[in-house]
Amino acid sequence: MRFMGTFTPKLDEKGRLFLPAKYRDVLAEGVVVTRGQEHCLVVWPPEVFDRESERQAEQPLTNKGARAYARMLFSGGDEVVPDKQGRIGIPAVLREYASLEREVVVIGVRDRFEIWNPTSWRDYQEAELAAFAELDDE
Image (cartoon, rainbow, N blue to C red):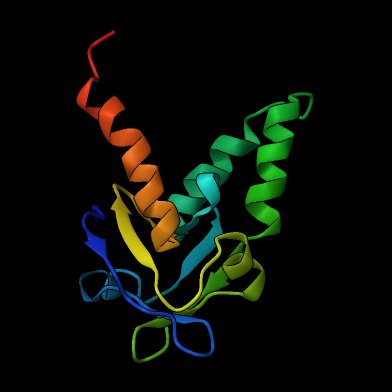
């Protein structure tokens, strides 16, 4: 599945997120939620996370950046199965990392999706839109 689009669901009082309806069927068996870069969260279908895990495992342990990436990715990860209403629980440590409260932004990013604090997403977009407009085949 390709994940595309921008959605603005809300977290409930228990820190659960309603998955966008168009994603629910493909994610019914579960997802992996991890820290992402730029202080967002990444939600991976298990098979996509497995590919990322394999790619990570190919990195030498002597590579300091690879070790740091693996530590951040896996130490904050959580495997979650959506409930019957299509909600996934976001652990408190991950909500804190991404500064998530009630309002969130969910963006599709090809083979995964990200969960952002709305202010952080707006700031990121503003900073990146000019660079996006200027992209060239360099």
